[in-house]
Image (cartoon, rainbow, N blue to C red):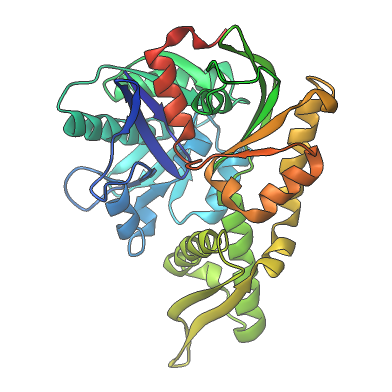
Length: 379
């Protein structure tokens, strides 16, 4: 049975075989497949890394971050934020859920999500040489019952029976071995900071099964918001130096956003990084590069509010579940926890040891696959 993490930025399918985790990898041999769908002029939709490459030249027909608007109306905060940063157009007839307008027609968010999940299933079948008909899928902890129902529907549209839907940080707890015999049995906080959502759970090993003591989260806060804040900072720089409004150019705006994501990743391991887009700007026959030296110190100011929001969610979730003195550790999962300022802020706030996941982006899918193999692990 597959464990599937349909992520805002990346999606992963995992499988337990003979007690070991395996992944449905893409043509790059990567487990984390970009949650991007491109609608070409002819032929079937393109998914993953290839779609991400095409996004640079055709952003109006390349859809990303669709998870944020599943089961959401057009006037929802999630839809408004996505529309403000994306080149593609969101539409909705009447009070219906969001659809995306492409050259191939209007597609519901669930339909685009199903294209991604179907791609994961097909990659798994190609990798393992067998058919897959069942899966465990994950959802944000603040997801409503309707979103859980949508996830079941999305799985069905992708050719899968979804046998169980579980919160993403609970899946992450399973990936961290909380239900194993070696776990100390003391409560821990799972801080799952992904591309589109922040999910927090307080969990404990009770009789070798996961007991959930409390949950919290923010479904409008994730790594994409860090990219958007970064992009606004770059746009402000361009306006201040060249008096050019980059928002008027859909391709340039999308390029700036994608470059922000790449530089953000570099800043996870480096104190400073070069932000460069060749001949991005032009006026009166002249062209300029966008060429900046970006430092962690500068980005700390740009991202301060977002990090503070994340820490507040963790504090409030803990406060509602148990005394802070009873908490043993914090497990970090999700790609946004790569950022040093996020790790520092969580450690300083909760004052307990951090359990840092070696591969935080695949933890949720691994946990889902583990539950698929051992369904009695969650009480």
